[in-house]
Image (cartoon, rainbow, N blue to C red):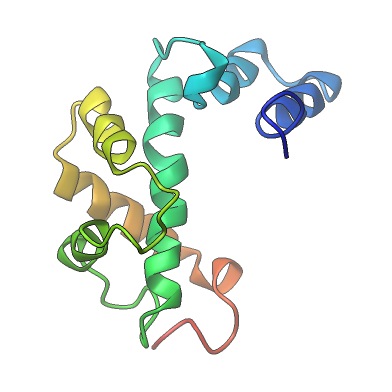
Length: 131
């Protein structure tokens, strides 16, 4: 996708066409810094805080023998220190998302890990789910 027509602009058009509430559409717009939409509401801050981090945590899970099972904030933070792992992910944005929510980064990581682990059957391919 391109910045002019791709994510999240495509999602915004789809949400509007399907009649989703304006506050949800705004939250989607605000989660991408380049859209220039300030994050003022809790939903906007939450989406920003979990979007990229969820993808990073899943990338970590894909390279672990146990997938999301037994994953800890410590193991995710170790991968955050490796600039070559998921190199396109802006580490400062991940930390800023938790800070903007007023949540400790380790606590935020644990919440995201737990939420993803609860949906592992939907999120992880068979054989990469761990025990």
